Length: 477
Image 1 (cartoon, rainbow, N blue to C red):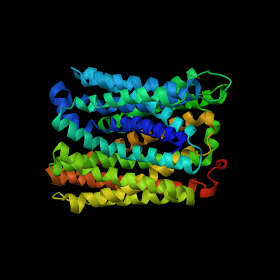
Image 2: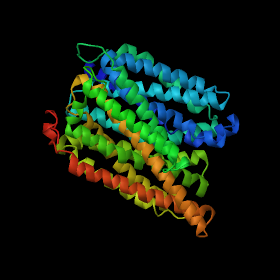
Image 3: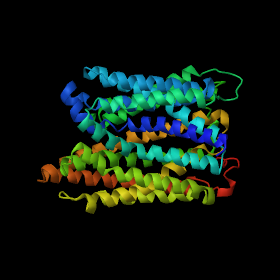
Image 4: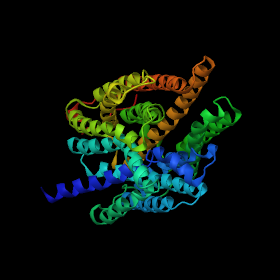
């Protein structure tokens, strides 16, 4: 194999490993939460911060991280984020109390917000647009879609056999190896721009607005959607984000040039991403609860239950990366969410005394097919035709859509789940029966999310024939 091809392949492996760590850490602690709670003695209201602290800073700083990569160097920002992420993982594994762990989870999320968009930007700039980049983004999309399922598997195995601290320590050898090779293999690159001015007012407004939005969505099921605190938080987020948009229209060097949203397929792909992620994360969250609390699976067995998801996503990602080059990305983006919808509808009929082979596995396979096809085609659509000096920004926007979609989906569906259990209890159902009724309603509502994603793709995405993927992006609506 030519040296150039070897270098590109190695670059992709390194970046995919780093992205795998980022996605893994959003779910790996889920099955470890009971063990962490027993040792660090979280209060009931603070237990969710093991997950929320990571989500909050990750989602809030993505736009800043993506733009910083374009301005100050993609390898530099990627390495900075990776060093901070690896360090926070090591110290997090040594945590002696709940406050220390939550603070380090927040640092992990902040670091990931600089790592992830920089890594995807390097992929976009390393591989030529067209078949070559589609194959690379096929790997990337597979990692993004399969990382959450793999996190449940690894989290279960590590927690049961080595202890919850290894859910954090596992990042250290991977991170150190990637840091070592990145400096020797990946060349520095940044946008060809006349300035290195970072729009600080825009950064403050966007970051604070997004963090408050994610926080409001996460807390809404607990506080209530109509509570004064939820309404105040949502209004504050709206005001800050409106101020951000106003600032971007007046700034000479905006953090997010709003002209990027004139790319029709970029805008449509991000709109599709929101409900897809909402449906995906709800599946992992509620189904992991079902297999542990209703089917009484151990952490390891729970993780193994999700292993087929990773395998099927890997296969479907490889297929769609080739398929897009022949038929374009509109058709996969439109059809794939229907598979996810089908999987969610299967889960909406889970029985109290269900079996893995008869009730869980069929839905996992159908849904995994849709996830592999969706994430790859969305990633290609959201980055095709984007100019090199905005590749980091486009990556940050795509990652932000994932985080906001996930937070919004879990917030809404947690509320649906709680309301359903309350209603079932009032009607006379208790225990597992009421709990399963809650899962049914949550999965049913989630299926409407992913059905909406298919409709958005059908209406909003402009068809680009496979042989024309190297051409300029579709114009704005």
